[in-house]
Image (cartoon, rainbow, N blue to C red; front, top):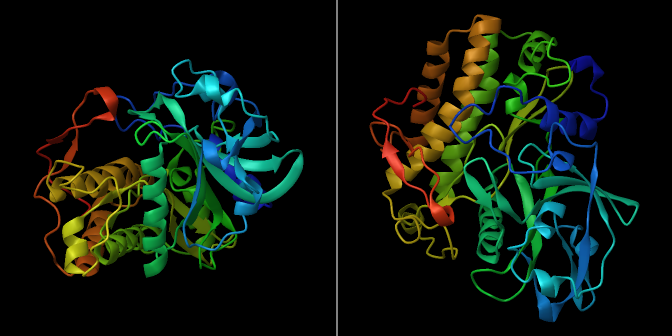
Length: 405
């Protein structure tokens, strides 16, 4: 993708999501696994596809929302009920909870969507043939994408809405998650969807936005093109080292630390969840976060006199592993290994940037943002190399020393 061809911000974002990720999913044994039909595949699928909906009465489930202001509720919340969008692959899944009962409800308007990089989150183009305010839907998907089966049950939806309120409260730049519908009443099996805004809440971000991996990923449709990172550095007037340190690494570390130390929420700033917003002339850029399905450190919240907790993903209560190990997973492995290491490798190969200089920038940013607090262990923790039943996971000490802190 050529930077000078970027005219439509939404079109640029969707192209980046689908086609600028070549070579970016090689960070684990399972990262490239996508159990999805070709028609819905982010790279190989059609330009768009249709997500069916059902009109559910309130008695059949519930519509959840938090206190973030949003006009999107009007698209899904109706008098006495709500729309339930269902991914076509989910609808075809024989083990779908209450699948037979779902078929008894009236069909709602079809939704035209474009798949994003993780396949089960989609961009909404139109509902019932009518263009609507741009936004995203995160859908229930009981098949495996990467390491985990991507079910979206009520406790996760409630968690994400809770985290969104916390991030909004302290001013973290992120895409607001504002509501969602749940089908059924079983506390463990009821499933649904989540509504996500398209712009960072409360932020005057530059006009173009792409996932971070699009900076260092190859172009699926034009493999001969230079990376987006090379093009952005060229128009910025900065050196590659300065650009990455000041525009990417330092704000990523600062965002992670701010979210953790003011809310106890451990943001997962890997290449998909981290968004890079930029102006075409290279003058402005901003790091933005997305996806509030994250872990919560209750000890940090207790220290802030914040005693309310969500019903899921609380470290030591729901996650039976030490806090420092979980934080190493999200910082050292997700942000460090899965994103910044890939970025640094390309910058070294294409721009002659020294990896050691980027490591040093991250260490300085981490020390500044955390005030020297000891939050993480001396070595890096990551998942063991296994697929466990029922979405379970286990961390192991890799024995490797961290380089991004």
